[in-house]
Image 1 (tube, rainbow, N blue to C red):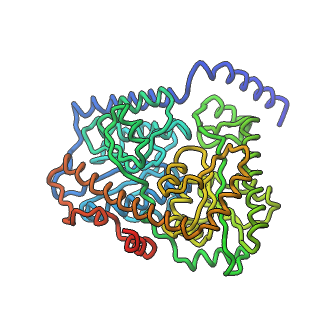
Image 2: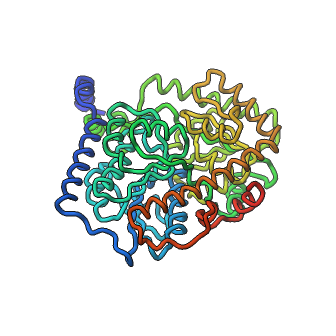
Image 3: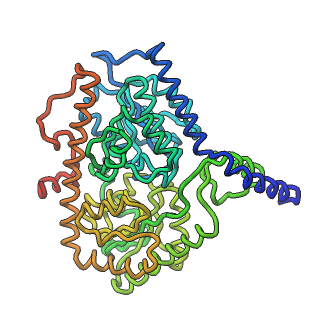
Length: 494
């Protein structure tokens, strides 16, 4: 880099330091979204969009975090679509899915139209919600400041715009957690006429305090059926598996570089000098970064590697693989591989599509994951698993299984020792662990069916004449068709 460019970079960084406390970019994103919701309310009062009429399909917009090759987010939406098609009837429903990158969701979400949502999403939502009869917010971490206020602002925007136009506005299987004050006020102001079907009671309590209507629910990935077992085995054999070794799958993340925040000035400098390249997410968004973040990641990865090394010494003959459930996880996977000496099989979602990824997880004999959906997606295969969590989601999941001792934290000072103990326990007591998993899966399938019932009743409140297919008053009748993995579980544990 030339001296001139270095001087430009230093000057710009100094300006950023002075400006960062003067203007909060997250707050500006929220204010812009709030303003458009109010504009939509005024527009609706003077020029309402045509309502749904009997005989035409109900057009629903699914707004979520898809198009980034986040396996969990994509699986969630895939199963929502299958459930909605079952509950509403194909001929009566027209679904559109927002995707950040259509190339990364090509071949997913069959029967749904995919719409490219830009990183600066406000005007897109303002225009697009108007052309639909309702909105389903799909993101699991729906109202949280942990990952990105902008993502939660997008969820509020989609729901708030629909509610402002007296349309269906439902958050499906989402969570609420710790929120910055500005985000909390945004949710309170614009989601009071939405319905959030939350996947745990803790989220309902938070939203109840904000005046947001809620109902009990769960995640929607439970019914997902992956690629056939043989496809996973071919991938594993190409990676050196002998066809008989028990497989231990490690799913690391970078737990410490959240939240992602919009930083327009930093983005401008980055575009000129290339500064902060390691922290740049997309567009004007940057991950949290700095020496403390780097040190915390090093400790986490060293601990994960140490536990795996000790496990392989205690359980000789196991075949280890590294899994990146989101393309963002590639860096953590590669760093963990380095800690382990290099050369381990690596399966990352930028190269492995969701059907094969879940098939790989279900072929394992043990999953160790900091990704919530690696655990959820492996559970219908009765795969013992251990979670290493950065927030409450994995802890809640292990509590639901009756196995709280299998949830550890990413900042545990003795993570390597505690993780080894949990891994050995999960394999030594595999039958009991599998039984807890099986009961949890079927319980969550029942909750997911009840979500379908709740959604049907909610839509009837808007459109009493909608021709829902007749079905028995049984939550399992509101699930999409179950495949060869989940159907036997229901028969065994129901």
